[in-house]
Image (cartoon, rainbow, N blue to C red; front, side, top):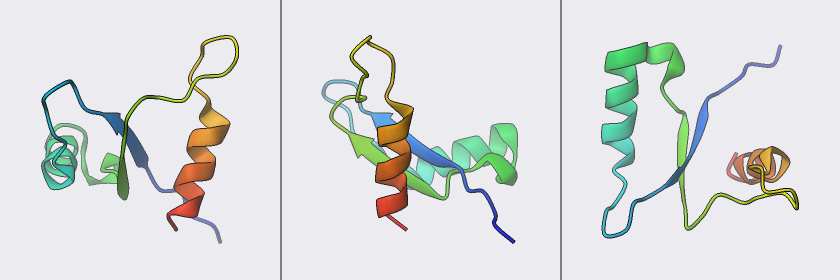
Length: 67
């Protein structure tokens, strides 16, 4: 049986850093543990498709690499 996991791709605001543990705690507190990301990837920018939409296939592929 396959299970699904939540993965987060985060782009930090200029001059800010991302604290993965704090992000998980925030999501757990506000949405519940089921929605807390199993992995947090910090990106320089969200990859876009040629038409300017977020490239979900590329994001899924990078999430799969981390497993």
